[in-house]
Structure formats: structure tokens, C-alpha cells
Length: 114
Image (cartoon, rainbow, N blue to C red; front, side, top):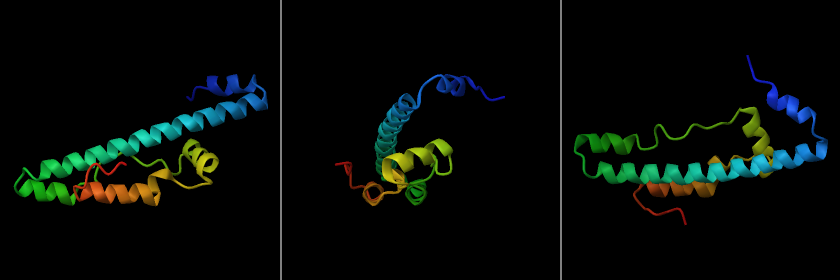
């Protein structure tokens, strides 16, 4: 059964405090998304480097270099609220500038984070 403690606590706070709390949580999620993006780029570039020292397995690793990265949370109600409030519904994990960095890391062009 779900823990309703959080909901009960929100009922005791006025609307202005709720909005500030939601914005603060969205800002935290934004920082966490940035960390996930950085770690994904590190993972991709490390896989690329490792693949250069492997024989046949290296080619397989390069073909599968983007597998098993962080899960995407589209569809999750909290993540959808975050995207709506922070990016008008856009997903920072799908923004062009990040996807370009992923492709650069995939090719071994690292650091591409800058």
C-alpha cells in the first residue's frame, strides 16, 4: 500500500509554500538530469575506449554502445510535471545539444561535455 505521509504533509501547507516546494524539487531534478547526462557521456566514451582494446567483442561493444544507459522517465507523472514546469514539456534528455554530445562520445570524441 502506498505511503500517504507526503500527501498528508502537503495538506497542512498553504498553496504558496507548495508551489515553492514543487519548484525547488524541479530544480533538484534538473541538477540530477544534468548529472545523469554527464555520467552517460562518461559511460559511452569509456565503452568506446575499451572497445579499442578488444578483438571481436570490441566491435560488438561499439555496435551496442548506447545500451543499458539510464532509463528514460517519460510518462512518469512527476517527470512530466518537471518537464512542463522547467521546459514547457520538452525533455532535456532528448534536446538536440545533448544528443549531439552523445553522438560525439559514441565516435570517441571526448570530452564533448563542454
